[in-house]
Image 1: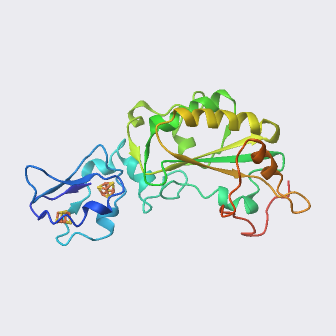
Image 2: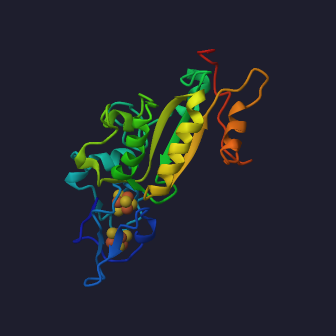
Length: 242
Ligand code: SF4
Ligand code: SF4
């Protein structure tokens, strides 16, 4: 994103709206705002909100060129990923598991959402987790934009992406029920080293009696299921009973 300095009056209206705190008034020229290129997520919010009274925000050419384009694909909800065809973080799979049955009865799904709320992350942050989980042999869900970008053997991302900053992204993995505690232990260990925030979601099937077996497993790991946790179930007719 860039600001057309011939239009900008330095009114400062746009500054508080940027989730990356990338917009600032130039100290040497306070009647002009500018964008810290390295901090900008390319989320497009400043332009989309139409807050600038003189329409000074313009998309820069770099926004549409790889590797910077990756920032926009993960951060702008109006840009679909070319492989998942879903915009922004690029996945809806966890919410539709009741219908798709992607996570089977002998499996547990784990979603790791990096960068939210409001901090952002880099691919270097994410690769700390993906490389360690690859070594544990976990399966990365296929229809997910992070999976499509990472090296299948190592879990690393292309080097040119390492320092690209994005608003958020979701890693989705599937583990055998018996391996859940071991993999979660590794996730929590990496959490001590990673340089951003992340939240965890788990996807488990309801038991035959309407019970929730995953809850006991989480509690044994010292993770309490919050009473206001978001639960998605009953969203449609199941396509799979396994
Ligand atoms: S595109 Fe997003 S991150 Fe970049 S300056 Fe605009 S609001 Fe801030
Ligand atoms: S709102 Fe527009 S005119 Fe005002 S500081 Fe931001 S870019 Fe400049």
